[in-house]
Length: 260
Ligand SMILES: Nc1ncnc2c1ncn2[C@@H]1O[C@H](COP(=O)(O)OP(=O)(O)O)[C@@H](O)[C@H]1O
Ligand SMILES: [Mg+2]
Image (cartoon, rainbow, N blue to C red; front, side, top):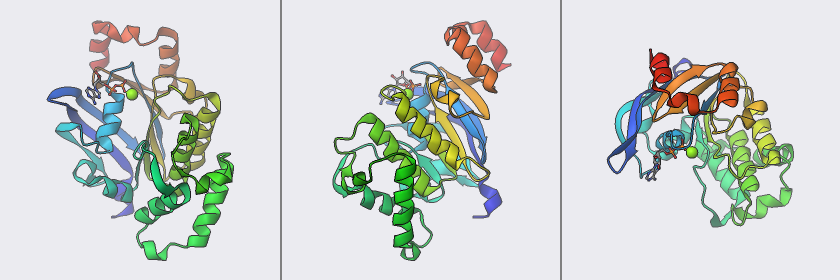
């Protein structure tokens, strides 16, 4: 793939749902590599559905649209191929895996992303792993524990961010599901995102609350309502939501104006 081909992630007219019920009703969104976007919106607006469709969750049905990473339609790729081309989807491995340690899991994830897994330098991997764990304030003993087995919400989140830092994806989709994230976990997540921030990294941070946006300043903010992006703007949109909540979006006249 030509480097220039993969400089944006573009969601085009995406309609998807579950059991024949349309939840995403035509989502359009473009993120350039190098930009961090936030996706906000009230509960039930379809934010997690979007994340699940992007990650290829088998329960969701695609009705229309495509998601282009350069000239590749991500939705046509098997899930493991999505990681290979540089997409990182948090909650891809939410299950606990008995018998697979954190160290082994992360090593496999990096191998799966590498062009030539045989070429991977194992000692530099473990060096980077150690440094990453330290950066995220994860107890080094975690490397030998079974993945997510008995991990707290915050610990799972840290592991996820560790995985992201090791994989160095082109685009990361992070569905925060804010509940259960204490302030420390929130800060660690933010620190991880901010570390990767730069011309080769794009991200979509999905969040119901503006809290995380105090730590990661988004380049652009979108609001999802009823399966569509109804507003896009800069940080002032976050302030507006902070002041007025999501209630103002329920006013159809507002929606009509936004859609114009
Ligand atoms: N697995 C599912 N089964 C049935 N309905 C679902 C499922 N996932 C999402 N939905 C429905 O889709 C709508 C959007 O949900 P979701 O994407 O979780 O919203 P958000 O993440 O913005 O809170 C809701 O009405 C929800 O009940
Ligand atoms: Mg959600």
